[in-house]
Length: 339
Ligand code: NAD
Ligand code: TYD
Image (cartoon, rainbow, N blue to C red; front, side, top):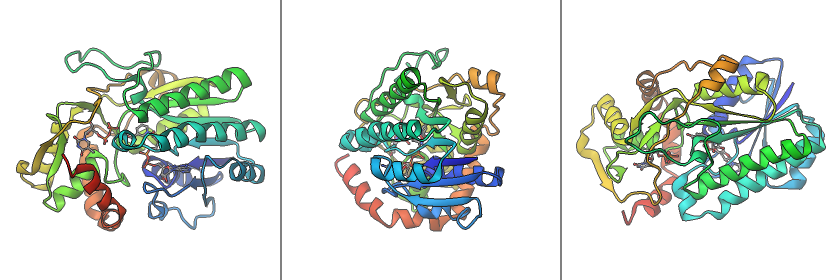
C-alpha cells in the first residue's frame, strides 16, 4: 500500500510517520508538508533515509501541485494532519486557518476522487464539540454531540468535518474522521501548553497560565492517538466519525504543577495572565465507540505519559532549542507582551 501523510513534519503527523514506517516495512509512506513555522524536518530524522519513506515539500491548497503528486504516486490512503493548529494564533489571524484547514481539505478530497484513493482520513479534534461545564463531570462528548465551536481554529476544523461527510454522502468518497482530545509527547511544538511549560521551566522563565488555570483538558499521549488512527484507516467503517480520548482530565494548573514538581522547579514561576478570549472550559471524550468497535486501548495514563514526555525533552534539547532560538522568540514576544 502507498500511504500519504500530510502535515507529517508536525507534532502528531511526525509521530504517526515514525510509527507507520517502522510498523509496515512493506508499505510506502510519503510525507507531504509545507514546512510552515510548525513543520520541522528534524522531526523526521528517525525515518529519513529508510527505504519505505519519502518526503515531499508542498502546500495542500496548491491544486496543481496536489493533482500532479496524486497522478504520479497513486496513493491508496491519505491521512490528513496538515493544518494550522494553534488556537491563540487563530484568534490573532483567522484567515490562514480557513485557507489551510478548509480549502486544503477540499483540494485533497478532489484529488482523492480524481485518482481513486480508497480512503481519505481526516484528523479532527474534540474542539469541534465546543466545551462542557466545569461542574458537570458526568458529561462527555459523544460522536453525535452537536458541533458548537468557540474559536476560529475549531470552527475551521468543524467546517472541514462537514465537508468530509458531504463528500462521502454526495460523491461516495471513502472517508473516516477521528476527533481526538489534547495530545502531548515528543516533538510537540513549544507554543503549546505542555512543551511551553517544560522549556520555560528549564530556563527558569515565568510560566503563563491563562485566567485561573481552572480550564480542563483531556490529555492523551501522542502514540495512543497514532495507534487509534492506524486502526481506523484499516478497520474503521466508511463514513464514520470516531472519538479518541483516554479519560485523563486535568486542570491546566494541575498540569503545570506536575511538570514543575518533576523538574524540581518552584511554583513561584507560575504567572497568571489575561484569559484567552472565548476560552473553552472543559473537554472530555467518550471513546467507547472506538474501544468497542475496533478494540482500541490506550497504553499510557497521564501520570506515566507526562514523565516520559519530560524525559524526552531533557534528552532531546537540540530539537526544541533550535525552535526556541528562532522565529518562535518573536512570536512569544508578540503574543505575551501585553498580558
Ligand atoms: P502541528 O501544527 O504540529 O503540525 C501541522 C503540520 O501541518 C506542520 O508540519 C505544518 O508545516 C503542516 N502544514 C500547515 N499548513 C500546511 C499546508 N498548507 N500544506 C501542507 N502542510 C501544512 O499540528 P499537530 O498538533 O501535529 O496537529 C495535527 C492535526 O491534528 C491537526 O489537524 C490538528 O487539528 C489535529 N489535532 C491536534 C491535537 C493536538 O492536541 N495537537 C488534538 C486533536 C487533533
Ligand atoms: P493549548 O496547548 O494551546 O491547547 P488547546 O487550546 O488546543 O486546548 O492549551 C491547553 C490549555 O492551556 C488551554 O486551556 C489554554 C492553556 N494555556 C495556558 O494557560 N497558557 C499558555 O501559555 C498556553 C499556550 C495555553
